[in-house]
Image (cartoon, rainbow, N blue to C red; front, side, top):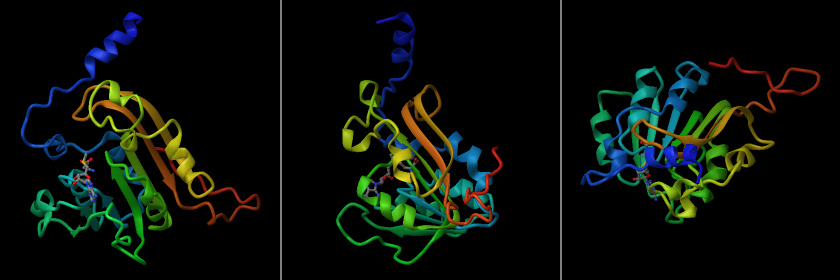
Length: 212
Ligand SMILES: C[S@@+](CC[C@H](N)C(=O)[O-])C[C@H]1O[C@@H](n2cnc3c(N)ncnc32)[C@H](O)[C@@H]1O
């Protein structure tokens, strides 16, 4: 193995002997979400799927967005109750029950470090016109370094692009090794807008969004 690759392999593994699960110890929001937050319409509603500790629910609420945070375990979200405009929904998203928020739409749907492919359709249907999908999670290759290692929880190359192809306007996409920070690993991330059929242009192209 070339030296340059060895260096990356050595930097990523996170020894994880703490009894509190890693996702509940993370307090800083993802850089990706923080960067693209300005694309979410002002005071627009946000759905945080598999919200964990609520680090993103808190960030969006503090930016003036009413947030709905879903998780099957909502204990860690309770501190947001009352102090922020956060609706907490306890639901198991993988047990075959219908989507827990039927008929509701949001100006942003955000998903971080969570993958359950059968939900993809619901996530896109839940976006209001002009709404923003922010998705960031682990990808294949991460298994070399740390959890998650199950391919069911790891995106394939270009998978988020395929998910939104023909349905949303891709504003930004990245895939690769993230070193450092609270959550290093092989990651894929996308920011895409639900405005493909909102064009006023003769050629039908969606309106471009300002890049942060
Ligand atoms: C790795 S954590 C990510 C938490 C948060 N999105 C973040 O990035 O900080 C994964 C989250 O998915 C939730 N989760 C796992 N399986 C779930 C299920 N079947 N239904 C709902 N939530 C689930 C867990 O409770 C956990 O909070």
